[in-house]
Structure formats: C-alpha cells, structure tokens
Length: 197
View (spheres, one colour):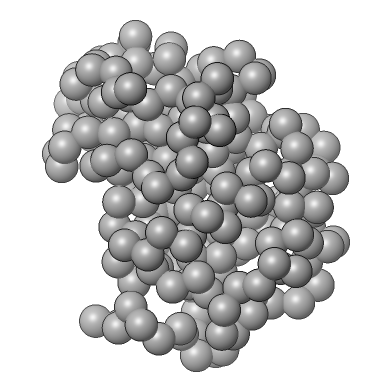
C-alpha cells in the first residue's frame, strides 16, 4: 500500500478504475425524491451528499449521473486515502477532466511534483472558465482525505472557474469547505433523506 506522505513517481500511471461511474446493482432501492434533488437549477454550484458507510451515497449519485444528469461534461473520481497529497488529488482531477474531453489549453505543464502552487490553480480555474457548456465534477469518498488543503484549493478553483462548474461531493460527513460562502447554493443531503444544515 502506497504511503500517503509521498507523491507518486513521474512514471506512475493513474488508475483508470477511479474514473468509472459505478453501475447500479441489480436490486436497488428507488429514491426518486433524492434523485430530483440532485437536479437543481443552474444557480447551484455545490452539492454535498453525506451519509453513513453503506448508506447508498455512491449508488444514488451514480444513478443520477447515468440517468438524469444533463451536464455537457461529467467527471467522476473515486477518492481514496492515497489521494491525500495535493499532487495526487490534482493529478486525478486534471486527468479526469481530460478523459471527459476537456482540453484545457491553460494547463500546458503537469501537476507540480512537490506542492501545488497558486499559479497551477489559477491556470486550472482559467481553463475551466473557458470551457463551453456545463461541467459536473463528482468527487466520491472525499471523507477519506484527511488533509484539508484539497478543500482550500478546490474552493479557490470553484470560485474562479465560472458558473459552468458544479461540484458534487460525496462522503460520510461535510467536507471542510467554507460552507457559508456556498450557503445560497449548497444542498447537503443524507442518503437517509435527512437534510443537513
């Protein structure tokens, strides 16, 4: 198992399985009300889906992505403990965007090898702001990320990427985002249909 304290070598491949939207099981409880809540108006920028382990969070969001999501581009990334460093986190985000067909001309260099700096985040946000159409970035399992720096950096990108970017964050508890900033648009939901404040 790879240590969470060291970035991968330059020649380490990304894992294709982390970009795959999980297929729904043969027998799945239908949750039409929650699926409708995942399809908000254009003003909603951040959606947080929370619930206990085994509560159906991933399957709920996957069902929405595979069925009712109307975005022009959807990026799904399954996060794990090993993605806790800035380099690993952003390597998967950038690769996910590229696999979704987004050619970000502002990102001409790879993710920095040591730490992600403001220049990289600015270039990423600028590239997303130039993307025509809507982009949904689903990060499943964000509660596995113990270093809150990912949320600070993601908040910066989300604020500067324009209205076309929507975040869907799935985990066991609320992510360490500055929630008051997103309060007008955020919807935090539990898979047991209990709305979080």
